[in-house]
Length: 200
Length: 200
Image (tube, rainbow over all chains, first blue to last red; front, side, top):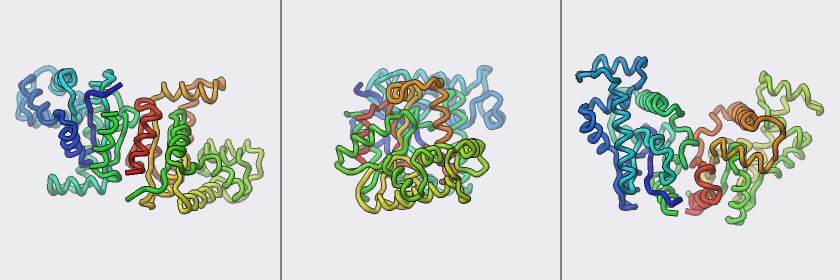
């Protein structure tokens, strides 16, 4: 079946964002990343910074990381678990975007949220740690934390968040049509492969 | 760098063998699967049936599965660990094949054995359990064992064998250029994607 929407999930530092940007430009369709954050903010009343933290830290009520994040949060925390409120708003927004028009959606469990739509193409971008470290330092600079630890921490947080809401293993190839290694293929080849699958 | 050799690793029942056959035909290059087995037999003196078992069961000396396989083996077991003898012969043969001509090599840790060659393209084929079960029953028939157990047992054996000799996680996407889900993409799309990466 011809695909309409592409979801791109990615490891931190794998070049996923820049792949999505060029891919959407080449296909002349919209892509959604930060805009989803703004829409969640408008839907839930939470500040974008808070939403980002909630999507980074584990959402389980009994998660140590999540409890720490909540404890140090400067925002008012309502009775409902804020991570759940955010997740449900995000799921609603992603479904609406996919319904509206052909587009590319980055992360935010979009592969899972749109799993039952046969017109969605799900891609995961990974890379070796050396390439990821290089890209992270170039794009975001050195924040003083050892780069290996930055990568591992981010992977762990995404893994916990994703598995909490989807009951799936984050990055398991069976959840995607294709998993591309940008460290080996290069960003441009990844774009051309995704274009081919989408357009064929 | 333009690629010369393709290694295809695959989950049991993912259609990897039929993908390799058509791919090699379309590219007009050789593919090696059972022929490697015959060459290992000729190199080591072990019977092909024994080699297949040794490549299926865990090679670790202290592995329960491996010890069981050895205990019930009708073949003479020399002092050297036969699994090691077989692995080293297989590594030598795979390196020779890759040196000789453009070709496709199936499984047998070939992605790891040829990891340092920049002219090798490494692909992993996976699929959801439902598609795998359907293909296994169609191709190999029902052997009386529950299909879920057949799949899990084969996955476990390949995982143990691969990790024993490579110290890597079997099927981890970072070890391949691309991991393709034949259950979602279909065999033909997998072939076209691999062709594109190989020829570009």
